[in-house]
Image 1 (tube, rainbow over the protein chains, first blue to last red):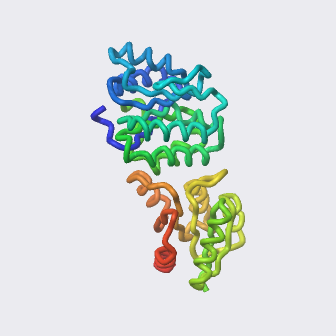
Image 2: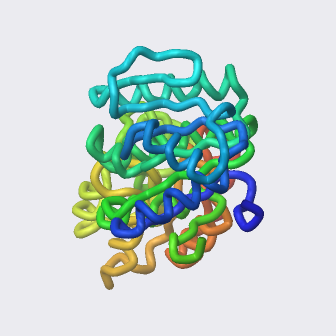
Image 3: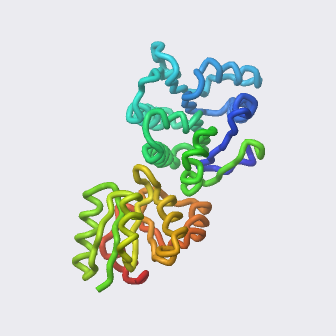
Length: 167
Length: 120
């Protein structure tokens, strides 16, 4: 974690690197106070990675758009039909109530299924406005982000951009 | 009289910028998005373009790249208008795109006029 700056970091992942690299990132944030937004895979998979890394998910609050299960204090299930507004409200609420040290957004380009690039940019910018509370923010972007120019536009507003090969 | 092109997808912002700049003596023309901007630049040559960073379709960065690639428009002066805070990387990109300045929304009217006058 030390090689990551405080503030917003965009982690650009090639599609075939996702499975191996996302585990690395989860391992780095395990044992911290984390708001983890699960867009690409469910929170059960993230919890498995945390346990495999010898950590625990006690400090995690998950926002999960993959499942429709009943929410509880540390699992907010929004389902796949969640709108950007619903998701933004959920993140803002967790940031306000829990004050997590770290926010992980896995993965940002999944939002391209909810709106066009500029909606995703506006969403990301609104999330980044909580930087005063959240110390570190990891915005993970996959292949689709590069193709539509999302990565290049995001590079203009994030503190740092990292390719997964450099993690 | 100097001409400023305002490119913003939000009509209230276009109207506000138009009113503020108009009252300062500038002629204002508007474009509703990046494609509209590039199309209008085929026949117009404003002294300055105020370009919104986040728009539907083409982003401000992409529009500016389009302006720089076209021999007819590559020397036009551009200022970005944005709700976002640019990072150091972002500021480097602004230099690469030869963007003169950036104005953050919400903007102060007097500051806006001062920056536009300085640019042209």
